[in-house]
Length: 545
Image (cartoon, rainbow, N blue to C red; front, side, top):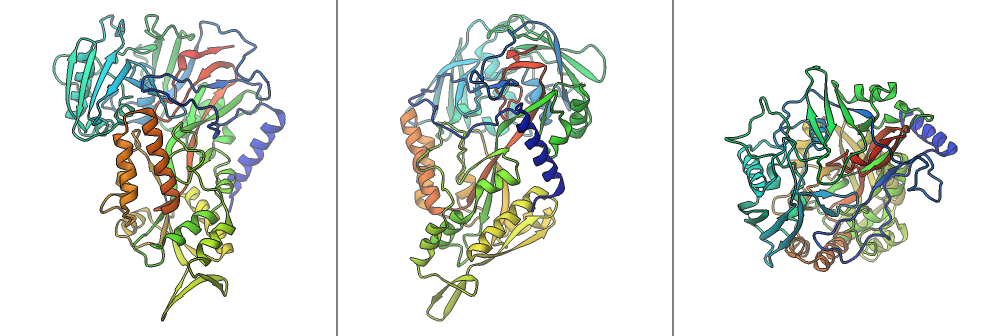
């Protein structure tokens, strides 16, 4: 059921559409993705900040790009200004403006070069030979080298609580020769370079520490602290290797929380404001503000207890997946701010297989799945008789009571399944009990969300001892093939096989990938390529009208 706040947002969005200034959210169409892309190719999938959505020249502005001016964004009081030690997400995003990684993740989840210009992978997917960019300088004027990359990796390894600890955990050795790196892994992983988007810091004497760290990056803007206490200043780096930003400066206002940031945006105190808050619509003014979706790695799904005598049957899981109306959930509950997904491969991704990667709702096919395997519809519920036993499709959907959106998703799914003849009831518990019941497999179904890793390592979901009680040699083999595929064609084939098999086996039932939202003032123009791990990506291309 849609609550009153959601209805208000829906009405507000309808108003924006009517007056023609809404920006399109991230597209689910993959028809324009390029095939045969090698590891060092650079594809720009940019969102254009604009006010003329309906224009045939949607990527063309009436305003010529102009240098100068400043804008304000927000962060929180930082735990540290060291980009590899902070665990404050807003702080990480702010520091991404100051620092570069070896690679960038684009909006279609492809990789593009940054401090690394190209890389080669050994046949066993364990050795990566990386060529670094020449003529790159730190903000203090010194030259960037391979030793800086090695030092950064070593420092992350020393700090086990670093947000990026998992990114480097598989590295066994790093060798440097000039601007060439050789990184060796303990386990094969052809997708390893996807983990190398974290900020590279400059080598210094001794180990890095949180206290007293002063940012010194290679990025488009350099950090200045003018002892104002409640804000920082990021000033254009005119020596940036990738050109010159339009803005002179980005002011970073230190705010206490996300809600304060939305109020600050509403008042005009900041010009860009990312939000995960489903109530963001009430903070924008249709005459001066707009927004667009930020693709994320947040995968929402129906967890299935595959140790259950009924749910372990392939035809039951398949039928449930075919009955669920994902489009309705994304449209009505997420307000179209997401993309439907039946597998852990986002439909925005260049690795999505348009033929095998998604299962459309099809209740006729769902019914056939069941009847072909002896199930009958009786007294409003599907049942199966096997000798003296009678199995009924009756399940509980577990949710944690603190999550209103999750409750709405569970309600929609329950209604859809009940109308079909798969009877469900919703069970709400505290988050603590929710976790306990899932970990001990004392559930039938649950609504959950995973933040997937950048390298698409899904093994934790299906390897031995997983919380779904699922085991399948064929799926394990497809995941292994993904990690071993070192050519682009081989990789796409491996991902295609995984998606096809996933939609047959349905170890869990994918629902969608959620989007975050970037609110912005329409006084801004240019291009922003916001993605979940770098929401201010391409801020250098933004200018003031």
